[in-house]
Length: 66
Image (cartoon, rainbow, N blue to C red; front, top):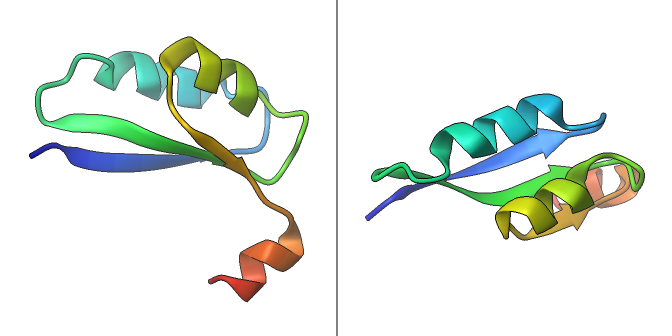
Protein backbone atom coordinates (compact mmCIF):
# COMPACT_ATOMS: atom_id res chain seq x y z
CA UNK A 1 0.00 0.00 0.00
CA UNK A 2 1.34 3.42 -0.95
CA UNK A 3 1.81 6.25 1.52
CA UNK A 4 -0.29 9.23 0.48
CA UNK A 5 0.83 12.86 0.61
CA UNK A 6 -1.18 16.05 0.63
CA UNK A 7 0.58 19.21 -0.50
CA UNK A 8 -0.36 22.73 0.57
CA UNK A 9 0.44 25.59 -1.82
CA UNK A 10 -0.46 29.26 -2.02
CA UNK A 11 1.73 30.64 -4.79
CA UNK A 12 2.49 29.50 -8.31
CA UNK A 13 3.13 25.97 -7.05
CA UNK A 14 6.64 25.47 -8.41
CA UNK A 15 7.69 23.48 -5.32
CA UNK A 16 4.47 21.44 -5.40
CA UNK A 17 5.02 20.70 -9.10
CA UNK A 18 8.56 19.50 -8.34
CA UNK A 19 7.29 17.22 -5.57
CA UNK A 20 4.58 15.82 -7.86
CA UNK A 21 7.16 15.18 -10.57
CA UNK A 22 9.49 13.46 -8.14
CA UNK A 23 6.81 11.09 -6.82
CA UNK A 24 4.94 10.60 -10.12
CA UNK A 25 5.99 6.97 -10.60
CA UNK A 26 7.23 6.22 -7.10
CA UNK A 27 6.46 2.69 -5.95
CA UNK A 28 5.76 3.57 -2.30
CA UNK A 29 4.55 7.19 -2.23
CA UNK A 30 1.87 9.10 -4.14
CA UNK A 31 0.66 12.68 -4.03
CA UNK A 32 -3.04 12.19 -3.37
CA UNK A 33 -4.35 15.73 -2.77
CA UNK A 34 -3.43 19.36 -3.45
CA UNK A 35 -4.72 22.06 -1.10
CA UNK A 36 -4.61 25.82 -1.44
CA UNK A 37 -5.94 28.88 0.31
CA UNK A 38 -5.81 30.97 -2.88
CA UNK A 39 -8.06 30.60 -5.92
CA UNK A 40 -5.40 32.04 -8.23
CA UNK A 41 -2.59 29.73 -7.11
CA UNK A 42 -1.17 27.09 -9.43
CA UNK A 43 -3.26 24.37 -7.82
CA UNK A 44 -5.70 23.90 -10.73
CA UNK A 45 -2.97 23.68 -13.38
CA UNK A 46 -0.94 21.18 -11.35
CA UNK A 47 -4.08 19.17 -10.63
CA UNK A 48 -4.83 18.90 -14.35
CA UNK A 49 -1.21 18.15 -15.26
CA UNK A 50 -0.84 15.26 -12.80
CA UNK A 51 -4.45 14.09 -12.40
CA UNK A 52 -4.47 14.86 -8.67
CA UNK A 53 -7.63 16.13 -6.93
CA UNK A 54 -7.50 19.58 -5.33
CA UNK A 55 -9.42 21.62 -2.79
CA UNK A 56 -9.38 25.39 -2.33
CA UNK A 57 -10.39 26.58 1.11
CA UNK A 58 -10.76 29.92 2.84
CA UNK A 59 -9.61 31.00 6.29
CA UNK A 60 -12.98 30.27 7.91
CA UNK A 61 -13.11 26.75 6.48
CA UNK A 62 -9.57 26.08 7.63
CA UNK A 63 -10.27 27.02 11.23
CA UNK A 64 -13.72 25.39 11.42
CA UNK A 65 -12.51 22.00 10.18
CA UNK A 66 -9.13 21.85 11.92
